[in-house]
Image 1 (cartoon, rainbow, N blue to C red):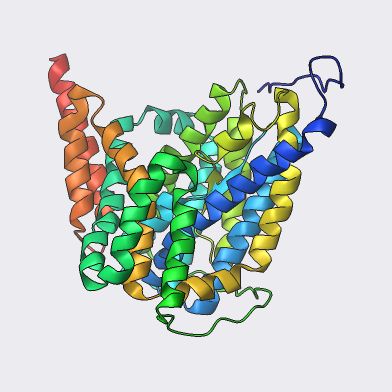
Image 2 (cartoon, rainbow, N blue to C red):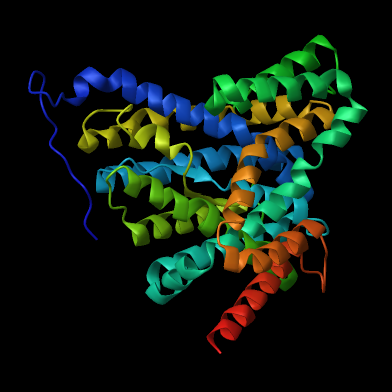
Length: 402
């Protein structure tokens, strides 16, 4: 597959070179790292807790996610000279938090590896990739919205339980969305830490240290693979990878789809025993580095990968400190921050699932079944929601052809 290239340019030609734009490249990369990490690290921690990860395993997972994102981004960006950015799967972390009950951490690792394996298969088997692309976007969005809804619904109870912390955060959240929408959640995280510190509500002490990695052998469990592995693969493909490719195309690039899926799939498999659930193409934060604000020359924007890689390695080394600091927050505050962080993705998912009038019923069935949290045969709601929605969609589509 061909990729977009551009001349490097030189000063004074109207197409300035990279030298005069390193500040903007660094600024774009820094913004992407801060927003990407701070906005959803709490969700990642909560997801890992739900599958039984202890604090050391949570810290290891956060660190190896940062390292995996840095390495896979560097490989893809340098190889193809494109501003390709890899992030962790936020929908996947929410899936763990809402569907991981009863699954052990080694079983979850087995499911993570299975999801990575499916990503690799998608990269090498073209018909499989086409089948995923043909999955109705409304149903994929409905599954995502159903997963997110259960988490966002935790905000009102948290506000009732701890109004002194949560109510100011909610008010600040909606006020900031009018001013600095991209930085709203990082600011909310900092404000939550400040409120907890001033209120003396930290539940433990935090030490500064380089994050040690843990290693756990996977345990293969069919229910875990079906409950977590398969939905993790599908929600990551539909809600992260496909939008990530769309962001690159919207900025004039032709992404190497198979290579991206192959590299992130292998990266996910290798990182899983250290606690990582999945890495994938970035979507929202990718827009920060793929557009003209990063560099006026499209052929030079890939060089943001140098500061991006360094910053995520630093964040990975310090991930244990971040996890310990956020883990020491009161439970209601954690629930509120994580729920607010998912408010915008929930709005996007609900909007997307209602776009096609002919698919609304199937999408709504997917949404309600997933949001219900049901478990059948030990398999979680995300799988049953997707299955029910696709079945109804297929039946209705066949009926319209008769």
